[in-house]
Image (cartoon, rainbow, N blue to C red):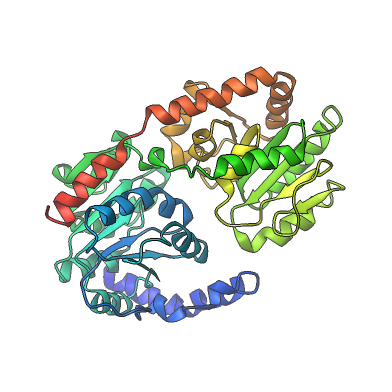
Amino acid sequence: MRIIYSCIFYLITPLLLLKLWRRGRTAPAYRQRIGERFGFAAKVHAQPALWVHAVSVGETVAIAPVLKQLLVDDPQLLIVLTTSTPTGAARVTQLFAEYPQLLHQYCPYDQPGAVQRFINSHRPLALLIVETELWPNMLHKCQKNNIPVLLANGRMSEKSAQGYLRLAALSKKMMQQLTGLVAQYASDGQRFIQLGLAPEKLVIGGSIKFDLQIAASIWPQAQAFRALVGDRPVLILGSSHRSEEQAVLAQVQQLRQQFPSLLLIIVPRHPERFSEVAELAKQYASQVIRRTENSVTSDCQVYIGDTMGELSMLYAAADLSIVGGSFVPLGGQNPLEPASVGKGVLMGPHQYNFSVICPELEAAGGMLSCADYEKLRICLQELLMEPERMVQLGKNAEDYFLSQRGASGILLQKIRQVLLKK
């Protein structure tokens, strides 16, 4: 089965390169460092490294506190952190600027030759995979080269499990090739076992996303933002996807009939869409300002957060958050980002990426689920009319976030035990 999979992967490689080239029209970084995607090392180093794979921004931010602690505990440790996206690469640069013993490289395509070239260059001590980036050749080559593999912060939604079960033989083999797995919740762990994971390899550790480190610098920045905005309500649509921006802009336009001073911040999920969203916003608002072009003003109606690494600051500056990826069938982006800075959360019906966290956050009184955009507008209207309720929603969200911390400690212990043999 894996051989057939590999042949198919080789056949579609030209399409993958074409996709990189097309995305490179709006995000030039996609056209850079192509060799790394075929396993060629960007940097040569003398010592073996711990290989950590985090597909993009969310996984990189989540694993960062764990990796920093490992580097503090062992200054001689070398880490090669791979991502699949330029946004992930940029976040690595920001987060680990003070850690020269951590290198970034794009993850090799899951071709036998590309993965083996990567292994030959970096000689991994072990592989730590964040969440659910399971690739047959990656795991096969690690097994062949006696490289232990630990899946960290493992998440497996019911929808994802059904997809893996369609390739049951391949999925079972991958489960057998894992040395260990730290799942977020018992429901995730049970699905991994159904796919073929041996129960003795499983540990339930909670979500490391609760251990998100909030930079102290965001608070004065958020206060400075509010000083420029003035005494007016501020909403934020964070990590938005195509079609969500237009729908939310239309709902906010209606709300302005009752709340004329309302400011909407939009932070698109993908940087290559910044300009597209800014132009779209001009159809719904007379004053649209981009973060990279100007400071926010007291008469700004829509503010586009078109920078990397400032989402937490903008969440902190807002009164209420709408989390993207939840009004389209993508499972929702991370609701803990606004919760961590004390902001109430509104999400659409698609929440399967956080199938445990979202119900718990809602039960704790820190989140409201909205079946559609009309329901979203009604919720926003009610909260804007009762500011004290909006504040309480944010307090409840932060209280829930703080009550769930500690998963990173469990994961660190497992990494030392399984991967670093300490």
